[in-house]
Length: 351
Image: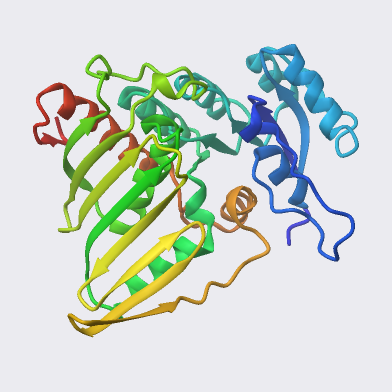
């Protein structure tokens, strides 16, 4: 483990930016798995949060109350540009509303930042995503987008099995997402990103239908994820350049959760946040189901995202959730809006 300490800052202090997990002192395991940027920095030994920023003074006060024992000298700002200039951070977390990511990321890349962890989706327009990617490239800054499941062993194990060739070529990916918050830009981005993660190709075209009543939704019109009525559920068929076919369906229902069915020539993988299973059969009348062994790691989810940035900074390599990978997901979502608006027609990704 490196001995370098990285000055870190967080911009945006809602739950994903600042929440602190509960921990039970009465059981013999220690250090709850982080599920926010702050908790990831807390658990990584080479990061120190020196400052945080939010336009809401109450959010700043809550952060000091919740994290004062960890970072008693943390400084607070309501102007992120001022914070970037004064604090000269190495690592910058961007956890604001979706449509605000671009300017913050571009400004951070043009300053002292060496790595940026941006919340998903990368942006709400391709123009903004391209600005962010270009700024990172031009300044030699790492840009990682927090599509959490890319650092979860359940999904990595499933992809490694596909890559091994043991069950043949991947043919189709079927994804379902359920819950009252099955919103395209809020949570759908995670699942569409996973379709890209498994497909390992470039999306060529998409056909889509949005939730009834969203004919007006020709571009992002959400409110940062607060109200499910502001962001539609949707269905889509996505074709990739390597022949993989992706099918995405989401519904606003009481039953919560999501799952993937990955069908290959010699079997099917069922994967979700709860399980990873292999299904194989020798006849139409007998299928054998077995659990895929999943090895858990010291760093997963947001903590692994921070750990990966530091590892690549110090050792080189590629990020599992780079800005360019995240752009694919955004391009699909925007193509879905256009397809619906134009009579559910097939929309080429180059349009």
